[in-house]
Length: 152
Image (cartoon, rainbow, N blue to C red; front, side, top):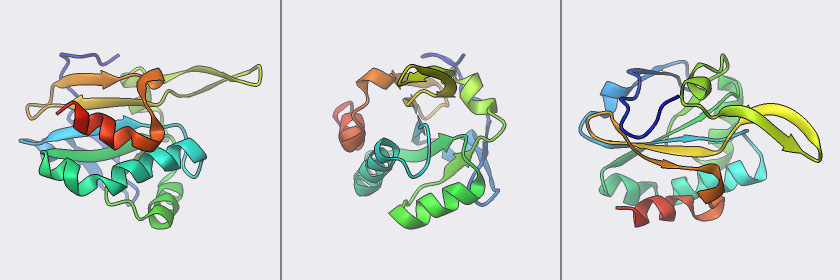
């Protein structure tokens, strides 16, 4: 499980177009690597739109944004198109990244237990080291970008 102070992996995964996303592509910039449960759901859409609406400000502050869920490339393409997202989404269909970062866990809804992604954001510094982890209970989906910008 990746924690504060750990080096993030070089190969993060493949985006909605099948392109490999590498940590070294973001060298010299901070990376907001945010994990979310599912495309096209209320909370996940609110979070993505918050990051979209503040994307220019995040970039001015030296951040790049990459989202991750276990949804397919096709699902990500639809999610990006519907919401005008200006950042890539990793299709972690084999669960490699969610498991490596420790965000794949048992969840419960209406008494039913199932495995899913815990909404978690990792801030990775310019050298590729995890410097901040925003835990699921801390994330406010509608103002998530503002939460990140307040940490600057």
